[in-house]
Amino acid sequence: MTTPNRSDRTLGGLSRRDFMLAAIGISAATLATIGSRFASATEPGPTAATAAALSSAQAEYREATAQLQSLNEQVEQAQYALSQTEAQLDETNAAISDLEQSITQKQGELAEAQDVLASRIGANYKAGKTDALEVILGSTDFEDFVNRVFIEGKVSDDDAAAIQKVKDLKAELETQQNDLLAKRAEQEELVDQQKADAQALDDQLASMQSYANSLSSDVVALMAQAQAETEAARQAQYEQYIAQLAAQQAAAAQASQGASNGSAADGTTQTASNTGGVASQGAVEQAPADVPSAPAPEPAVPSYSEPEPSYPTYAGTGNHAGSVVDIAFGYIGVPYVWGGTSPSGFDCSGLCQYCYAQAGYSIPRDTYSQIARIQSLGNWKTSMSDLQPGDLAFPHEGHVGIYCGGGMWIHAPYPGETVQYTSVYAFIGGGSPI
Image (cartoon, rainbow, N blue to C red):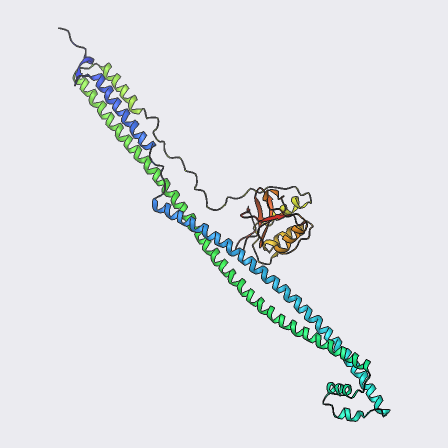
């Protein structure tokens, strides 16, 4: 009787070798399924609540910054209107001062003419040519006296015309003076109102700036929270995969051990057992190609604020492109101060005027005059691509900055901010003021 080969003995119709290989094949397929499940899983991220809160905070921050820009434009326009009214008031005061001097001069001329008239009346009285005593005694004051002299025809036509001319001119000057005094009162009232309006806008701007700063802090905090939640979710996903993989490996090892014990009990050769063990171990240790690896450190969530800029450099050639821009870069970080024209604080047009002055050029003080200068020189450009570094750029008539090229500029934005190098956010025109 022929003794069958131990390796040919069957379990459920399969040889033990085929059974072990089938068990190992099932384990590998299962591992592949686990890996595929994790590979196709949704990328881990923050919780829905955090993502929604972050999106809402970012939208509110963008809206707040838009309102800040609008308020800043209103403040600049109000401040410009105030400066114009104050300049007109100065002109009115100067005109009043000139008129007062003219009136004083005409009063002297009138007094001199009246003295001449009195001397002639006295001479006529001594010569007995007129009853001067009656005229004098009947007068209530000198003006009345002069009028009586005219009525009585006691002076010549030339004297009468000269005195009347001085009187008329004095009356005209006094009328002009009264008109100017009334105009000054109106302008002073307007200045007070414009100052109040400008202060109210400044208060609104400061309040909105504080609100925007708080929103910015909220955005930063929420982004940090979203990053932490994303990392936690990624770590949890990875740990879940490792746990399932360990469980599957344990199950495969247990199945392999059971099959090996059965083979020994049935007299299976050691060679077959060893071969099966080696094959099983190799299959178990083989990980599918799409098994996820341990999560690498995630790059930091981009900050909502602008990255630190890399400033270009310009050769100090002395021309406005090579010197004004370099000078302006030296004042980045200087605080915005309305009306400021020095490194202790700049407003937008003050920064431009100061930098040009440092380069040896004189340009007007306010934005409207700067625009007029550029246009009068024929240098006004309506396309930003036509600007050169060092040119002035205007997002609207009430704001200006120094163009640096590549869509970037240096400007003093609004109260609460500092001189900064950023992209040009709007453009109506610009050019060289020299």
